[in-house]
Image (cartoon, helix red, strand yellow):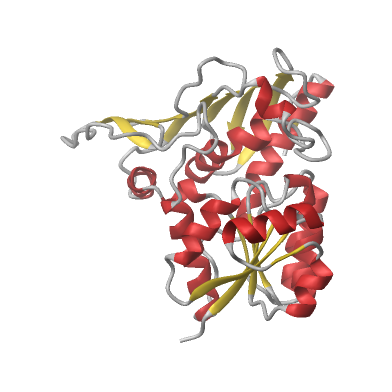
Length: 339
């Protein structure tokens, strides 16, 4: 069976999750890394004992690569994606796809035109309690959906932003609390509730010295007639596990930190299991486990080997980005916006 050779683009903190994941996947190997400058490339090469290049050109010229995993800052996903796609190299990228819909669409189109696999990391979709809830909705156990809420009441210190030249910037991050931290839970909300019809949003910067928002709220009207609420922040000390609430005509289910904490459906005697330790980045972005990254990267490897669609394609990474950018637009224009 084919071995998939990966290059990881970017050498920030998230890279460790990708390296550890790929190490444990059969038929996959990290053969190279790529940083944006020589000093960081040398440091990463020594730290991980993996060849690290300081430019995409030198990486592609010297290594045989089947797939890249993009772990750069959000506003630098487009260029490596397009360069890889042109060479017939498959692409998986960390969320969000990019910082604008136009740049995200350029990535999607480049991969389509060059017939390469394209996936977006949303590892929370691989968590068992989310899958249990999704299955219940698809089986009609909640009946008609009425209300879906996503609450991401997290905290980040001043050092988190001050120690980076891109976090919280419009060019590098595309915003802040919603597009960086909140996007995972927003993606889960959309995957369960369906397409959004219109949005009223309000964002502001209340605590941190950043360009983007550290507080955002929105009301969503879904195409199926349901309503939703999003609240996202990085200014709410000390930070609380993200919460997803889904209400239907036959009952409700609530997840906190990726675990079902309430399961109340009419005629269903199933009880919520006692929550184990949550896998939440509510106050520490590196407190999450790599096991769900491993599941998604393993699926991506299988999609390459067996020539099938990844479970979470690049196109599936677009709705959450579109909703978040629409919240920003609604806040700026002070009006409801239809998608």
